[in-house]
Image (cartoon, rainbow, N blue to C red; front, side, top):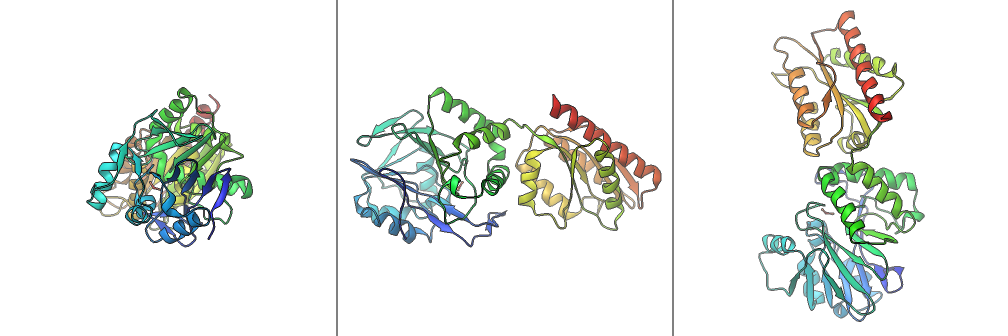
Length: 399
Ligand code: FEO
């Protein structure tokens, strides 16, 4: 296992996890990587570590260019266990002279490992330290992804080591964006944003402004997952700008499930109406849809139309489960409406509308519900509702 040279004296020394398929609920169908980077200057610096169980891979890759004991500084950009799970083992082997991290990272490591006899040095945004010909500038990025998070910029190389941000759960034998299929990479990057970064979009917006204010000129972005952006760093910055500003596309998602096909009949009538407006419409039935993939579609969609029958005074569990997940990821800037069938109590419509209110969606129709099986009048109202949502989606997307 060898290090991969990124630039002169700067190496990727991370680990590839080909087999992980569930990352705290995120379906990582293409596996992932835990990236760590090594800078060899007058001081030797290791940026981040790897998930517990991958430390041997990390240390072998480091050893392919320099003895791990030669490392002087450790920079901990993020303490989540997929990066800092190997912290104790790495520190025990490397015995770094100093460990740079934020205050929240120090407190977080203490809460994980219940030890603090390390040579920590807390840093804040704008702090710069010389490590020889080069220097490191730190930038705190709380909540991208955890309160402890920060990034490190190497001005002399124009490299931004961005921890989770700009990353993707994407295991590949290649290390750079120009070596992989770009569509596949963007798809995985969008999925990562939608399932990990989405709730912190306002912090991403602030970060992008801070990067501009600090005058960072970025040639290369080195995230802690996926590949290094060396050819398309501008592309991923633009995507983050778009996603964090809730810029959506003329796409309507009809997200529903059905018990005895009544709600499904309504879903197809809603689709018919939306299609009359010429927008893209996708049917997503929650008994078969993958939540992780669906969130990436939610990221792009301006329209969200929700459907569920009433079951035991509530929603079908497939629907309530996904909507709870989606609500936590805080999508914004959506246009929506709801529908569903019922037998006697009929609460589903009200609950679906509450979910739309909680994500601050603009509700453009009061919703359609039907007792047992929809008749022609109900289906006609569903068509009208689908058309109404799509019309508003078109107006907003062309504004
Ligand atoms: Fe890749 Fe928030 O850890």
